[in-house]
Amino acid sequence: MSEATILIVEDEPAIMDMIALTLDHANFDTIAAESAHQAHVAVIDQKPDLILLDWMLPGGSGIELARRLKRDDLTADIPIIMLTAKTSEDNKVQGLNAGVDDYVTKPFSPRELVARIKAVIRRSGGSELDKPLEVFDLRLDPASHQVTIEDQSVEIGPTEFRLLKFFMSHQEKVFSRDNIQDQVWGANVYLDERTIDVHIRRLRQALTSTENSGTNYSKLIQTVRGVGYRFSVKPS
Image: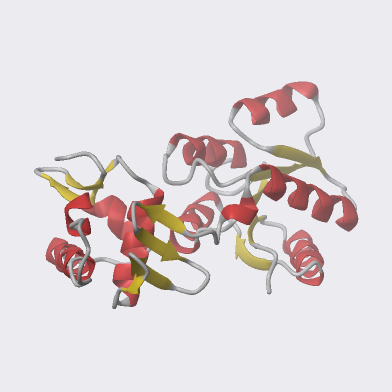
């Protein structure tokens, strides 16, 4: 089983290949991006556990991308390690002020890089990623891909499972249909708004299918008129 999925953002092919080989040997899955734009799409589509981000990139600097990701509630929790040849204290302070979690200066040893990655994932709670999500007696288990209410299995499709996981991971926040599309289907998928509404309706139906439950869990998925949807334990 993979340790975690790492997004490598690096425009030098030789360095990219070296890092990918190092992480493969350390039992990490890797995603590659050569520019800030490719990296942002990969973050939205594939949701890596950590980003290795080169400072100098075509189409925008790594530090600008780091700031953008850390400003967005949906990506702010993804840890970032900057890879750079810049060694001055001012550059390191600039990176840390942007929300970067660690800083590795080129050239670096493969062992150091792997150790720093593991340390950052440990600090950021990466081991919590597959832990079940629970709201009252509603339980979603990412590892077994099961949803239960009062220990009764809920029949749910794969898209509805991803929707529910997204909502349960981001409670009490309002998301537009575009936000939901990017996080559940990916940034490169274009859907009619009605498609998203249909899947929300199916999810609500699944959450009312369990017998003997004293709570109507479908009501936790609230429609916010003119904006989108919210998962909330508070009455709408």
